[in-house]
Structure formats: structure tokens, C-alpha cells
Image (cartoon, rainbow, N blue to C red; front, top):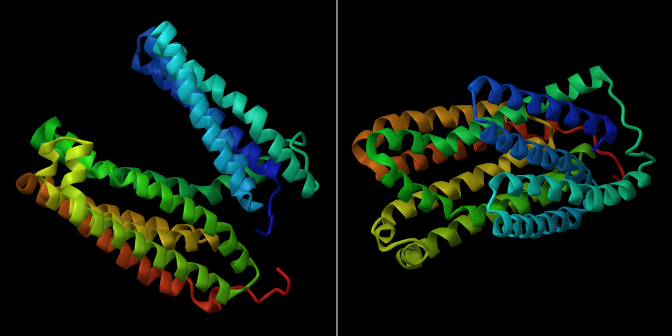
Length: 353
């Protein structure tokens, strides 16, 4: 919000890290001894993800200028193009490599045809040009260091999602993992809505912090917390009333037999929504390290509970482990947030910001 760096600095940093990532993928394919077809498929998917990562930088500028409608349209158009291209290519060629190349072509076309023109319009308002790309290594190093805790936090979050499955698979087999994963995946739809609301709140909260407006920041945080509580309560109530019917219709009757596990997972998810509000507050204040420490501690609690409960408890043990880990996360974020978001940590108020 204080524009310490220009957009071209962020863009150069993302290009640099993306190119390094592509080189690592290519080297990994060579070292692993993949067959030629698998190597080409992996590289095609890597290039597609690279385009998505570059587009993500433009989303950051859209968010900073509070043009979330640009992000929504871009993602919607992408989804339609990706689905149409992959379906058409597979229908005519039945070749997964061509379909993956279609993903890359579609992503590149969307970036050039939609993201770049919108980006130019916004940058013109800031007196910047996307063509003024520059590689200043001290700036890139500084941005990488600032982004490091966020990247590590995403990695820990990925481990959190995978931990119950990693403990379940060797002890109880693929069938149990499949049932548990299917029930856990039902929260994705709700999570998409929560992420959208959180991202929409991030920029106003960051601006409130930069302006030293403690009251506005606290009001936005309170709104996020109340929203999270409402979503969690609605999800849990819906699961309790219609969970067995939903599981049977969405999956199979066997899934409906595990309503208790489904409700435990919904409860754990609700606590995670609560914790995410504090994560957004920390990001708005550029406090990136303590959320990483809290998330890492939460993962260790989750892993310990999985190690203890899953061998004898199976899916129910995994669900209880998720609930305990989420409860610890919500409690730890609440306690840390009370100290981190204290009024004394805000800069002096700035008028007309």
C-alpha cells in the first residue's frame, strides 16, 4: 500500500523465480529418468503453471487497485477456455500431451489478450509502464526475502492437508483414504467463497493499517471473524441436518455411513476459517513471520495427533486429529493476533488516506 516497489520490480522477481522453477522441473525430469512422453507432459504442465504464476502478478496489481472484478473475469474466462480447449483436443486427438499444451496456449492467450490490457490501464494511472521491465538484483533479493515466509507458510499448509492421508494410506489402504478424501473435499466450495471474501478484505485492511486507522482495521477484522463464524455455523448445521443425504447423493451410500466423521471435518474446517481471518490481518500489516511459526506449530500438533490416533482410530482418528489441530490453530492465532494487532503497533494516523 505504500508502494515501496514498482510493479516492474514484482514482475521481474516473479519472472526470475518462475524461470528458476522451470529449470528445476527440467533437471528433475532428466535426473529421474522419465520416458520422453512423460517428460514432455511434465514440462507442458510446468509451462502452463508458469503462465498462471506470471498472471498472478497482474492479479496482485488488480487487487491493490481494488479491481477484483478484473480478477473474477480473468479466472472465469480462463476456466471456460481451459475446459473448452482440453475437451476439444481430447475429443479429436485423445492425446494428453496436446491437451496439456492447450492449457499453456490458452493461459498465454488470456494473459496477453485480457490481463495485459487491463494491467496497462491501471499502471498508466500510476505513471508506470509494463514495458519498463528491469532486473535490479538487490530489489529482487529484497522481494524474495519478504515473500519467503509466505511461500513457506503455503508449503506448511499443503503438508497440513496431506498429513491425515499420508498416515491413513499405509495403515488402512487406498479405499479408506478415498472415502476420507472425498468427504474432506466437500469443503472446497465453501473455501472458495471464504478465500474470495478474505482477498476482498485484504486491500482495505492494508490501507487502513498504512493510514494508521486502527478503528477501521479492527472493524474489518471483526467482520471477517463474524463472517467466518456464520459460515462455519451454517456449514455445520447443514451437515447435521442433511449431511447423510448429501453424502449419499454426491458419493455413495457407504460415505453416508460416516456422518460423524463428516461433521468432525466440518467442525475442523470452521475453526480454520476463524484462523484465516487473523492470517489476513497479519498479511495486511506485513507481519509474515509469526503466522508461519503458528502454522508450523499447528502442523506439528496435527501430525502428532495423526501419529497417535490414526493407527487405532482410522478415519475417525484422522478427523479428530484434524479437529484438534484446527482448534490449536484457531487458539494460537487468536492469542498471537491479540498482541500483533495492538493499537500501539499501528503507525500514526494519516489524514485523507
